[in-house]
Image 1: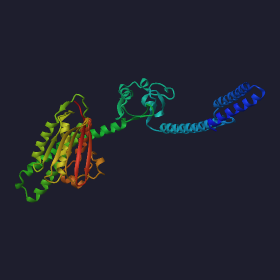
Image 2: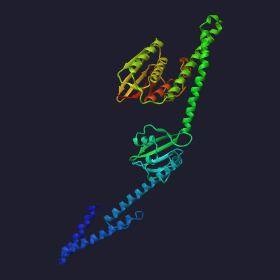
Image 3: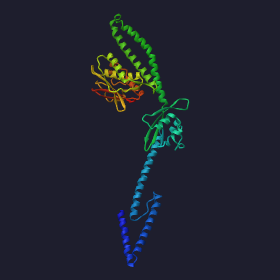
Length: 423
């Protein structure tokens, strides 16, 4: 029933009461009495609705007219709301059960940074307790400056990794934060001490083995160089094997050199006080060196900005040199290799572009892995060590840059280092 129909009924009842009252000479009094009775009935209905609203799970009381329509609609909306709340509560309980079963620590905080929920795995990592710490501000309970700065900065693009205090062995924690809802945050905390120790052992092993192999390899290369310098004193059947041995010894020296350099880059700590690097001068120096080493190749420079990069000159020179040498090796003879330095918005782009054989897209995600080879035979032919792009990746990370690779088979490749523009 619509409100118009209800209003029509009221008007009709008032008119009928006025007509009946006029018969006895009291039309006004009759209308007032009827309206007061109607108001009393509505008040009674309102009381029944109010009592029912305090117990919404019960079926609504019977009512007539517009009140029955209103109660039916309210009951329908309440029923749907209760079903939605039950579904939402079930989802929340499912998520909490899932997070509780995780090996990583999980903490939920509200928009003010107060703890709403946490699982048992996070208790020994951050020193929290559940449910005792519920409602407490997280930064008041976790007294670690690095953690608090990261949490309050609200810039969670990259995870935080820091050394936790306490215990005989060093414990490193990795924290990732995701924002959701109206400012709530979800924290994932993981103990990465074992992984870091394994990584450090790997680096130490590579560095130690490289150093140990360098001396005997230098001796072998020295004797081979002496022999190859006097090939006339050797039978001709030994000359070719000696030349092949010299080539392989040179490849091993290049490999050891790259391993040592990569190990050094990985172990170096970033320094915010690095010097500004003149990219124009670096590229000009690199072009002169490559022109002398590869006289049949054309190296073109396209410098569109004078912006500088703050960092380590040797690392950047090594990174760009690796990209340029790869472009030369995998390009057809005589085809130019273009090295560009430009400004694009708030980013500086250092691009190395060739028109060579290109790379299948399936290989691009793995190109920066150590010793990964797109084609073993091709890499052997060009004398690559498989570490060049790994060196580029680590040098880029040390300078807060990203390495982007675009390539199509038969059309060439473009390697881009994207730096944040400063100054």
